[in-house]
Length: 396
Image (cartoon, rainbow, N blue to C red):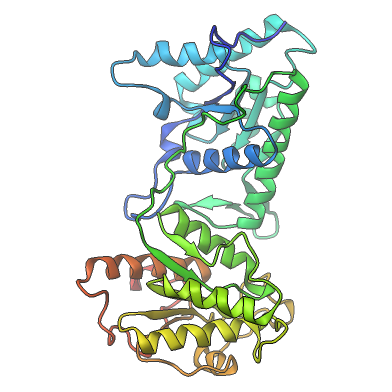
């Protein structure tokens, strides 16, 4: 016996998402940010597709209800079609009567099946820490996937996603993999057939539409990979096309690498460079390492094309996972640039703050360029290091 999936054989696999809308509200003062639920589901969708499960429809009331639909009837209909149920648990969730009703409906359907068909139909995602005794009984027995971590020594809880952005990307990705692996495995165990055409009908949840703009984000050395991934994700999520292709290597041979970089810069309005300790290694045939080579190529374009600028992150304090030997050491951003064989250009924008604040600066800077008739004048923050005080939000 299987859960009812509806009359249409092409409906695909449906996973009902139970959540509180309050947990999907981006910060009101941050234009280029995301709500947790939409962002998470977009990542789940992509990961399931990578795993060969492209037809799992994540049913979410915000995107599935058409004007004129009766809200409760629409949700109950989706619950009766769903194969799996995912509850996104939070302090907001446990106080919602409707979320409890959704859970109760699914629980009743599952109980009619009995084991083994009714087992592992409910998945629990913990957005942040909620006292276990306040979790609904139907979820208390479900192993949760946590999107937060507890620091017992500091007696604090760090959420992987906070303030409209992923703050702990490595931990977020690990939890995401745990969640999608469990969902994909259970769908396969249930033997639910794929759609005939093998294509996903899942809508893109708040995926940033293309804004027609291209930004060059230099390939980093290994110590800046994590920060690079987060920055690229934020740029793509707000509609920018990132070049060179973040998913592909530049190549192994010097001329191939140089050609790829030059062509990528040619279509970009600005370049972004992340400077840690390492210089990126040297492809065969090049006379300099990868990171300095991209800086130099961008400098040449800045000299030739008025309005083009390099945005350079040279953090005073390196990220915790960048280089254990220099953890806590303070660096001079201008000396860092010199060490990479570069001098400061008139149009350069150099930032030495944290990764998250640099990303905010990049998005704000690109927005200002859009609003300016001829991009930004060259003397805006010209040749100056932006040294905002850390942990002083009132100064920003």
